[in-house]
Image (cartoon, rainbow, N blue to C red; front, top):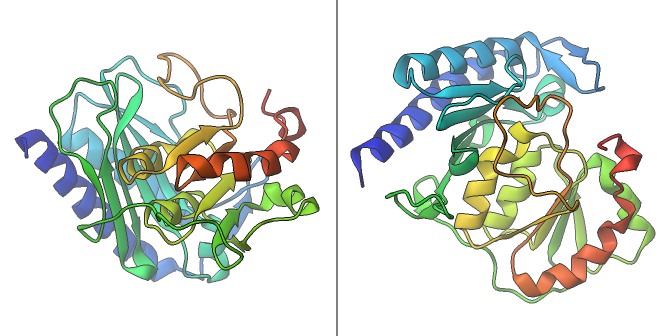
Length: 275
């Protein structure tokens, strides 16, 4: 593995685990406040955001940073980290042990590496996605350093389809498998990457919800299907990503798109104020 990628992986692992250990002390005890978009934030989110941004600045001083809590304008640097300091804040604040820390590394506006750590579960996912970058880099997706891949299974009533809270209108239609709602965008899609579920949908994820898992899921063989016509990546320097949402369907096999995509017709861009 090239030295740069060894440094990237070591940094992501060490930093998210250090921050995660500290967040465990506040788990289930933090007081949450409502942000303008209706989502929750705690002092733990803000502390973790600052810790992660400072760590990136010290280790990769030439890299830019976009984060959920503070930095929303995409910089003009070749390399940029996208930070979600605490994905699943509602779970975290209410004492449900499903929340994580997400770091995505973008090259020229497109994710090429992702690392997501879930402290209560002791699960860490990472992956490399070369795409069209031309970079010399590793390949593959991993959970706790073991390779993962999407499920080859056929659709059945005993497989899972993950929804988010804003996609429940899907349930007006017959759904061909069991439903799960996890409350964490990253984990929703990572369960597809790991082969545990066949598909997942998110109606209003922001860029920090998807940057890391975009690389991991595709490296694991998942099919990423945006639910709007405009491409997500590359991100554009100078653009503000604080209010943009990216409705997305992720499936384990390309032939499942035709099974799940019709169900998502109820997820409208205008309905959620995304256009």
